[in-house]
Length: 409
Image 1: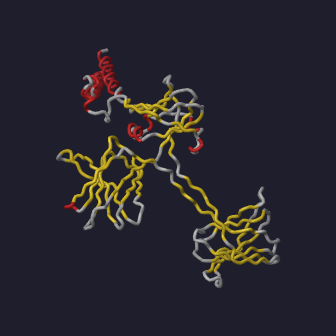
Image 2: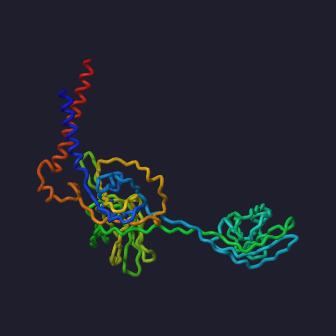
Image 3: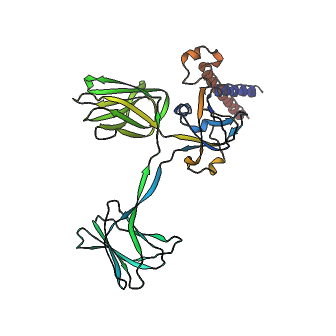
């Protein structure tokens, strides 16, 4: 009985410590029409969750938890068709159809034949040349199976071996069937559009010149740790090429104790011939610096440095006339919702809602020391850590006692 009371006390102490975890609340704009909504998560809220959205919950005013899904703004990729001019063609109904085209730079391994709807099998040969006189084989008598479609025109893809000939000659065998009505040749190129990034306003910077080392040193700082996905420099100089390094202060345990050192996380060049736009993977920082090596050149005139984040959205079904809010509790585990089975990646088709206010709820790293000093001892961080330590010690004491009792038996 005595040990069970001690165990209850230990768990109570740990529970008291856990009660400090809930730290952030965000109100969502009014919902006028029921449906699926996407809500852009601000940098401040992302920082409060330590970039871990397992801690996030969506509730209505009745404190009923609402299912949600976290989604990225996807990069877009699509294919663009380009036609190829036929510079010479001859059609012999009893032997072959011959076409000569100038090979464009974007044509690599797939040639598209656009032709009138038909269902005739043919054989095709393709040759390459740099002068339209000497021709070299690429494809010889390859079977071209054409299946009729529901539209007046159809496309047939022919795979090409890699080559760099300036001209291509295409021959289609007409000895077994009538010529096909070939309208044009073409090819598809892949177009890639990255998702738009959101500017990160929470990071401030200060520049100074270290003349003895011939470097420009820029210190960056923010109140919280933020995910940084890209960075852009605006520089007014005309001609320059300067090596630069991004460094962060870190700590490590050594035989002599705790040691502070600086680690280079990224190296890059600032150049007048580039946009000076740099992307990062898994970079989350609150304080860091960039050193620019000037050698014997005058320092760069840096007018602005902009940081960016890839947008993240919360997607949820929201009902009209109800109020919703988000809160963060760092003691939570990942939620399991059904909603993810019914949502596609088409964010543009969803309605928009937004976060209209954000407030810190309880003591955390972002609340200043003055606020801490006004709290009672039992609300302070010191009490929280004492509760954790005492709870752990009591549980260890009980565990050793139980092992001892089991040994006696």
